[in-house]
Length: 139
Image (cartoon, rainbow, N blue to C red; front, top):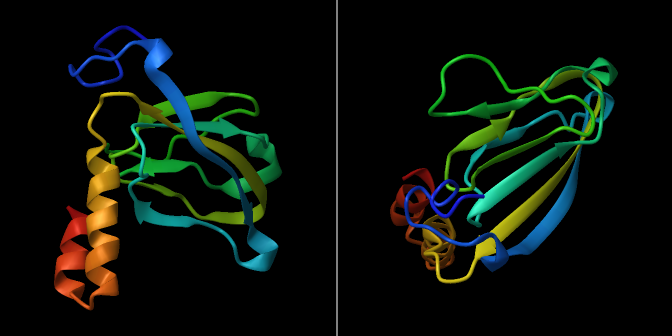
């Protein structure tokens, strides 16, 4: 990463990146687990790594709210990095299984705006302030 490339001009050095969390997502059409709703991740960068080949499922891919067109579909072993604060969703699959490894990264000294909004929304939801919670999550 260049100093400004991934931070939107805010700048950070590659050595400041650290893995915050990681998970494997299984989309299984036969069991009804077919998609992820539109959301933001609570990190600086999200890395999606395809563990399945596109010929193992129908549909699927990652949809970005701010980008026109269809979902981004990756070949097995291919990766995509995006800003975690960008609203995105796992497009529905209609057949087969899709496996994705998602890695979340933070950088020391870089404000984590999406994470702060999620924390603020969760706090408002726990306190019963549902309109405020919805605004924090949908902003």
